[in-house]
Image (cartoon, rainbow, N blue to C red; front, side, top):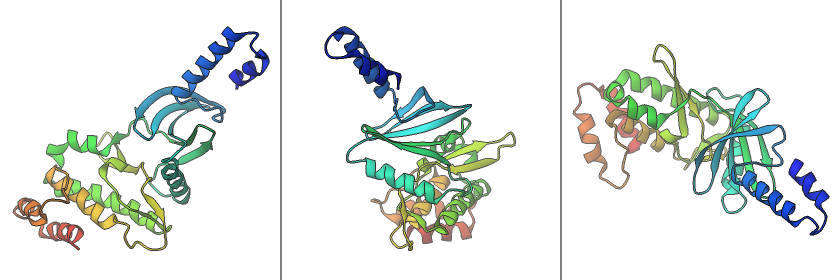
Length: 249
């Protein structure tokens, strides 16, 4: 806001150099994620910058929060949908909490809780592949949490068109217990029916990846991909049947 006040006091072209300096400062702040509507929020650092969105850390009072920003245009509708889904999921256990949302002339911003010790699920799976792959007990605990989160969302009339490991983050305690959090609801739909939402197939692809350490390829022959799993003695017949039903309902 200080920049706006300075600009209003310059008056015409009498102080062109100072005006240009303030414009450069304004551009710098916009580039690093500053929004004039984020009153009380202080920019901390940039986390990721994708093609259609950027993620930043801000400090707000005594807390650190994540701010997801999407420039105005073709892709703001997806963030609007995610904001609506987060509002619908408020209070759901292990779904990331939305703190606020801001709309200005340049971008749409989603402010959500930041869990500093959380690790993206794909990264966790890659680091612990040896301990997870073929370990049905560990896999079961992860899948139970994913299914519980989806169940709680479904009970609120919120279904996901698709879900993948990259939508989750996990926290590991001192005893290696893993707790999952659903971070990305950009594929959420507010609907009264699960028809066509794709959740079951998505759950199957996640289970497949946990069992094999490889992503499921929808373009390849299903049976050829399932055969290596079906011959494993370390995986129960019940788990194999469940996977088959999910991927080939």
